[in-house]
Each structure stands twice: as structure tokens, then as C-alpha cells.
Image 1 (cartoon, rainbow, N blue to C red):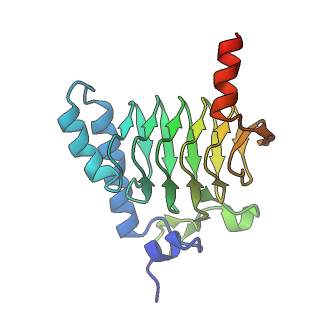
Image 2: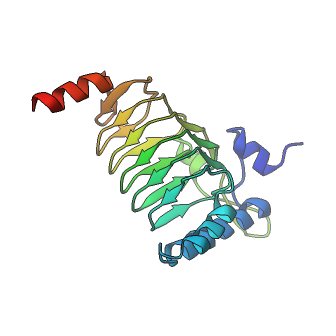
Length: 206
């Protein structure tokens, strides 16, 4: 029989009040608080906190506080990852981010979902009176060499390819293919990403 954690990570309905999940969530919130209250000049202490909060992070990871993680341990980032102020991560399902990814301020990655039907969504009560609800989620994947601009929300189940720019204020509810500039609410592809040579020529002409 699957544990609630196993159900959650597989995207199946699960009980978030499960003790294993509650304990990890409380720890992640505590570690987020500690990280936020540690000056960035104390890089060694911040790295120690980050190792506990988000163990699977690559070389060159930098998170500009404040941050807020639901679990932390279910978020996996590659090398040279940067997140600006107010990075919020609801990692009830695995969130996987590649190398050389830049995240602007006020970005939210939300893999968590609730039921549309209110009867299924509302709080339930056990025989002893303790409340619980049933939730589920879908994983989020962001490829290599992406720039997610400020105030972007990336929703559950989304995959973003390599070499993608997501414009400021976008709400991403569907997959975005590699080598794309995408923006809007809902976010959609606007055009292919210009090659490095095209950008160089544009700068020279300007």
C-alpha cells in the first residue's frame, strides 16, 4: 500500500495532514524562515540551510531571500540557478529545473492542485473531529538556459523546454516548446528565440 508521500509524488489524491508530510512541511517552512533571516554575506550558513531545504541543487545556486518552499526536498535544480526576491515553490509534486536558469522576482511555481468540485474540495472531519482535505498535484519541468521574468506563475503539469524566455506577468498553464519567447495570460508562444548571431548583429547596428 502506498504512503501518502508516495501518492503525492505520483500525482495521486493524498492526505496532506499525514505526519511524514506535515513534519517535512513544517521543517521546510522553518528552513525558509532561517534562510530569509540570514544575511547573504553569511554565504556558508546560507549554503548549510539550503542543503537541508533543497538537497538536490547544483553548483552556483543562489536564491535571493525571501523565499518560501512547501517541501523543498522535492525541488531539483541544476547548475548556475538564480532566483530573485519572493521565489515561492509549492513542490507537492517534483519540480525539476535545468542548468543556467534565471528566475525573476515574485515568481511562483505551483505544482499543487485542488478539486474543482466543492464537495470534493472542502474540509472533511475524522471521527475524532480532526480536519483533513484531499489534494493532488502534477509535476513541473523547466529546461536548460531559461529566463523566467518577474511576476510569472507556472502551474501544475507544465513542461517548459530549453532556451525559453517567459515574459513578465505571464500565467503558464500549458507546455512551452524549446527555443521560444512566450508571454501572456494564458501564456502562449510569440515567436522563436533569436540566435546569438542575430542578437549580436542587432547590437552592432544599434
